[in-house]
Length: 134
Image (cartoon, rainbow, N blue to C red; front, top):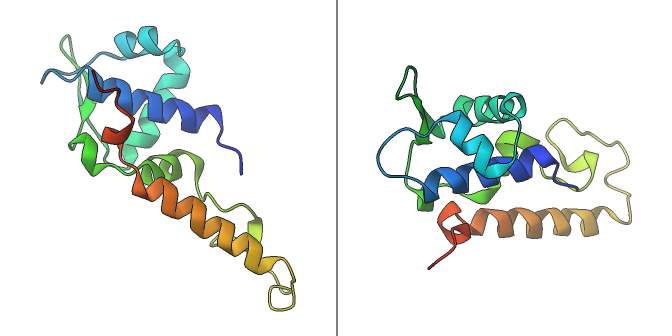
C-alpha cells in the first residue's frame, strides 16, 4: 500500500483548515498558497472531502471552506479512505477483491494481519493528533 499525493494532500488540507480556523471560511487560494498545491488539484481533493461531508462550503466574496466537525472527530483512516479508497495491502482483502485461492493461500493470514494493523493504526489517530502543539 502506498498513499498517493492525493491522500497526503488531503491530510494537509484538513490540518490547514483546522489550524487556520477562526470561524470564517478559508479561501481556496489561501490553502493553495500555504500548501503549495495548484488550485486545480486542490479543487479535486476538496471535492472528494466535500462529498464525504467533511467540509462546509460557502460561495461568494467571503466564501471558502472550513471543517464540518471538530478536528478530534475526524479519523485519519476515514480521510485517507475518502481519497485513496480501500487501504488494504493486497487486492483480495478489498471489498471487490475475491480470490478463489484465499482458503489455501499460505500468506493470506499475514496480509490480513497487516491490513488489520494498518486500519487499527490510522483509525486510532485523529486530525487533532496531527495538529502541531505550540
